[in-house]
Image 1 (cartoon, helix red, strand yellow):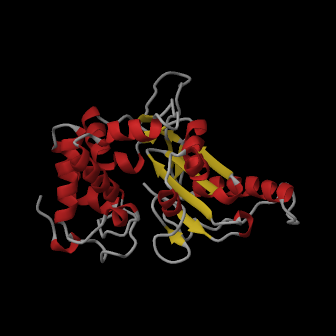
Image 2 (image 1 turned 120 degrees about the vertical axis):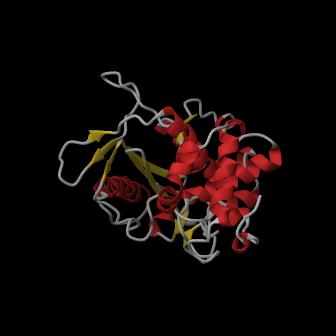
Length: 293
């Protein structure tokens, strides 16, 4: 594989922490959507093409600087595939879904034309509309190719119950043997500094989260929007989801407010805090943390 020399010293953890310099998704699709749509082959073959493509381009930011880039996770997946000789889809099934008993977990974007639908259908809420509009079904070719490009960064779907099983691994991973001490520690601290983005989550100091820090991530894809806040030190996980994405990001704010309300209830019931049972906690992360796509 040939690549831009600026990426020569990029590490796996830099790709996972969005500090490799790889271009963000909007740039990737603007430059390479037509070429991506024309690719043929397996997920692994197309993912290799995606990896080679983004690593040939000039870094969008200096390697080491933060830029949220889903294609960096595609590169990380391609690295695993190169080492193991297996595709990322089978690896995540074996090492994540199975041991965590995430029986509902699938990889791919779900569409359901049944009325009423059996699975959540993503919706968009434009600025000039009051009723969300269902997302149209993409072509099978584009869905296949985009899973290769973006799947490792956001194509896993599951029930809320199974999602919380994944999040709970941050709490019980060491005691159950699922995570080593070193891995568990890396997964709940910033990559650089005392606050900020780490390996898949951001870590922030919050009084309600002590001991330890609050972990958070939010994201949207294909008309679905979600956020979680958790504190492993208190074994508290709050996750919120809606199958609607608003152009003005109000759905994300509503999810954050819902999470804050639940955390406020928890803080009032388990600490000496004077917070009212239904008093929201100001989470204030949407202004400082980019929502993944």
